[in-house]
Amino acid sequence: QVQLVESGGGLVQPGGSLTLSCAASGSIFSIDVMGWYRQAPGKERELVAVVPSGGSTNYADSVKGRFTISRDNAKNTVYLRMNNLKPEDTAVYYCNAEIRLRVAVRGNYWGQGTQVTVSS
Image (cartoon, rainbow, N blue to C red; front, side, top):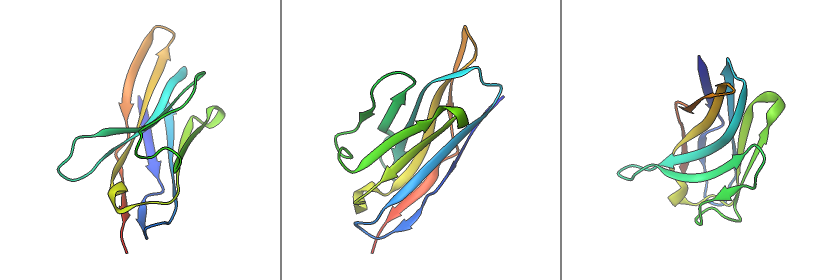
């Protein structure tokens, strides 16, 4: 069984910064892609940023230049550094990963979500 556990959410003032972390654990052979999505009240879940195991990162236009995604393969952990936060960044942030349990067995997994609130 695989688990994704997020941490680092909270309340921050506009212009502030937060770093989210997500650690994957369980019977993991390898992790192909790790990423972050978010869902604001009344809106659909949307991609924030993804980082493949061997490719380039990809960001939503709304966060380019402000957010940075990175991963530590040794720790099966992905991070999201969020700078210059805006009220419109307020949402529940979800970690997502495409994980291989064996070479030919791959699944898509979600974390439980962590709340980020940007408000003065």
